[in-house]
Structure formats: structure tokens, C-alpha cells
Image (cartoon, rainbow, N blue to C red; front, side, top):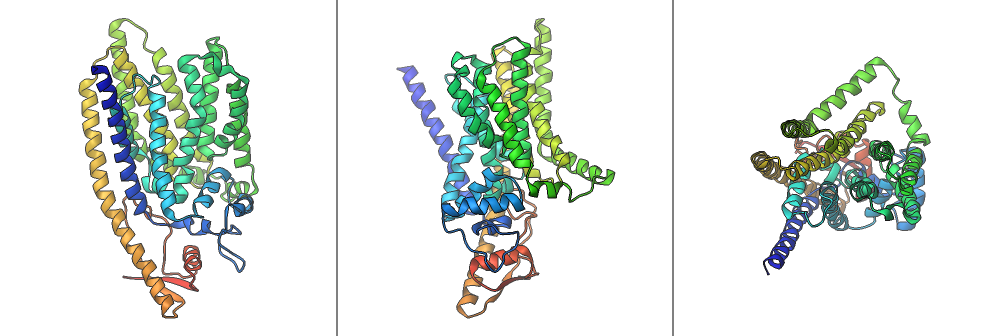
Length: 456
């Protein structure tokens, strides 16, 4: 009876945690406005600026042609931008619900990587993961809440984590069915999608797969067929992503000089300082206490840390590869953060299983995490809500001016913000220049000749 009661209690706690996380994410998504590229992706893609033949996407059948133009002229992220174009066909509430569910899915995927045994998984672990995602995912507004950004980063993060699950399962269990031919075949389309997901995310998951294969080879373990087809298909997917006319033109747009690389190094170091330094500190503290504990017991400390090290190395690679990118954005750090969270969780559970006393440290970390998460939410919700009200005011003003026959609309500029949970932070929005590309796309979307921003 007691065992059944505990199981029911755990199920209810799981449901409660998921319901709260879903509700919070849905609330934030509803108050997150269209910005930057969002207006552009409502239209059949012909170029970065609207032209005389520019038209709205009329249905799913329009997406392949629009995507092909985008692939040739803008960038090769066919997987993520197909999602963006798909969601632009519907009312934003469809995306809000799907994106909130995707946030839950990424949390579950991280939990699967941290605790492989379903019997030993606990509801509180999932709650901690959602808090950590909220607190540490980089530039949350751009990488999780923004329609175009979420499809490129949150959703692609889920894709590469899902692709790697067979490698993770085989490493943990060594199940013989992992060598099945059907899995080897299935990994081909999954690998193509994962490789084409993003420049640094696809490369990182390919490296992680290669590290696991090398690990099995070094230990003279059987290597499943899906491991090879997965790596090869990821490489092919990356080829689709990188070797496009648009990608090549971007790569050569900025000359390869010492000054350029010093600038990129400063950007990579700066973003890493903001987004992964706190997690690195936690990781190093864990490693220190685990090594000390094992040495006191007279047992080797290195073997249990090898797999978490692979995740850390792949996360680091996802950051370092950005030195070759002409455009470096903080939201690209989402893959490194996810891999670090996996490594931290795996080491923490390893220490518990070995009998290392970490209760005080765990309580301190959880308490600090809750305080950070709540504080960030209070500030973010107020800031996002203010922007939402201001954008609704802009839209209402445009419609009122249209009703009066005024086709050169003027709208108040948005209040600037430095809150990283607000999607308009440092993103293109209405400006005083009606010829600005964002103003042009927004004007076309709302059916006016021009939009000019004015001081409120």
C-alpha cells in the first residue's frame, strides 16, 4: 500500500511540476511579441526586403519554394526555418502552446541523460532542471520565447538531444538491440536533420557521437551499426547546412585579419563569461569534492568522470567553432549550457551513488537556484508585459490610422530594455527611419504604405 501511495504521489508531483512549467511558459509566450525576422517569415521569401511581388505565405505548399529561396539567398538552416514558416501560417497561440510543450520536452530529455534508470528518477529532479533551464539558458528571450529564435535554438536543441539518445542508452545499458539494422537506417534521416539543425549544435552532437564511438573502440566494446550511420548522416546534414551559396558569401563578407579574430575572441569570451561561467564553477566544485572523496577511499577517480567530460568537451567545441562565424550571438550558447547541465547532473548522481555526502551543497545550490529563478521571473514578467502593452498600442494606432485613411502611419517607439528575457532587447524593431527593413516588413504585414517611429 505504501509503495503504491508513493508512486501515485510521484505521478501527481510530476504532473504538477509540468503543469506549472507549462503555465509559466505559456504566459510568457503569450506576452512575447513578434519582432525582428518574425514579420519577414510571414511572407514567401524572395529577399531580405519586401518587393513588388512579395506575398504572404498561403499554406504549407508554399513552404518548400520559400525555403529554397531562403536556402540560396540567406542561410542553410532549412530545418529550423521550415518550422518558423510553418508556425507563421497560424495564429500565434498555436506556436505559444507548441513552444511551451517543447520547453517541457527539452527538460525531460535532459532528465533522461542525467538519470537513465526510470525507477530512480524523481519529480524534484525534473523541477530542478526546469529551474536551471529558466535561469541559465542564454538570452532566454531570443533562444526560447522569440518565434524565429526558439525554432532555431530551443527546438534544434531538442532535435540533437533526441538524435543522441540511442548513443546514450547504449553507453548506459549496452543493450544488444542497439545494433539492429533498422536503427541504423532510422538514424540516417535523424542524423541529417540533426546535422542541419545549426552550425554549432550540429557540429557539437557529431563530435559527441564520435567521442562515444572512440570510447567504445578504445575499450574494445562492440560498436552498434547506428553509431556509424548516425555520424555519417550528421556530417552530410552539416554539409547541407554549410556548403550553400548564402553561407559562403557570409563567410567571405568579413576579411580574415588579426583584428577580426581578436574581436571574435572577445565576443566568445564575453558571452562565455555571462552564460557558462557559473555552471563551470559548479562543475569544478563537484569534480574537486568527488576526486577528494575517491582518493580518501583509495579508489580511482577518473573513470566515472569520462562520459561527463565528453559532454563538456562537445559543449566547449560548440562555443569555439563560433570563432569562424562572422556573426556571433549569445543564443548560440544554448547547446553548451545544455551539455554542461547534463555533465553536472551526471556527476551529482554519481557522487550520491558512491556515498559521497553532498546534501549541504545540494541544498545550498537548490536554494540559490530558486532565489535566482524567482527573482529573474519577477523582473522578466514585468518587463515583458510592459513591452507587450506598448506593441499592442502600436498595432491599435496603426489600425486607427488606417480607418482614417492615413497610410503613412506613425507609432510610438518602444521603451528600451536590458532584460535578457525580453525579446526586444537589442533586436530590430520600429525605428524612426521608415526605410528601415523592419519598418518595411511591419508596414507590409499591417497593410499600410509606411511606418515611422516617433518619440512617445
